[in-house]
Length: 218
Image 1 (tube, rainbow, N blue to C red):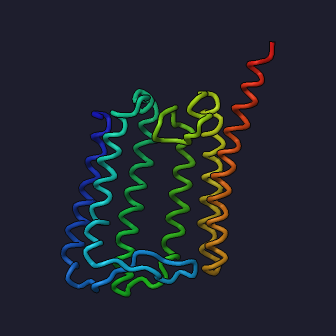
Image 2 (tube, one colour):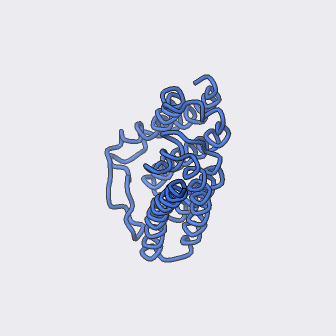
């Protein structure tokens, strides 16, 4: 866990965000947007106090990231991929903070078309994850975890390498959909993510069975 004390500096922007949230809290409406539909329209609201939870959510996330390396049965792997783990964590925290503030700005009427901000951020996050995913070593939390990647280190290595490329391609597609109308954009984004999950899952299985057949040959 000591190796991940570096995460603690992220509490600075989180604290600033929380303080700013408390300052403008009284100016927020009783109900704040919490979800947008395929057309980019708000279809769900939460009570105003919900923004306090979303402001604190990144802190909870960092705490979990700091604890996980100590409790994972393959804790030693984190020393081998700590750079990838740390960079991915930083950008996920930035993403959560951005979502929090997009919701606040939308509730104040400052941002009306939130999808134009969210989609590029999701796309960039996918690209970053894809770039660092191949560095992940076998563990039970960070990386592509299927029954076959966890059972065989070679399957893990091949799957994370292919999966990393898939994440980058999916991220580019998601980013480009900002140029499309909301509904077709939603279906393309959803289809891309589902396809990526299915392909990764199937690929890890096929690699595992192929390697198993090679080992069974005399």
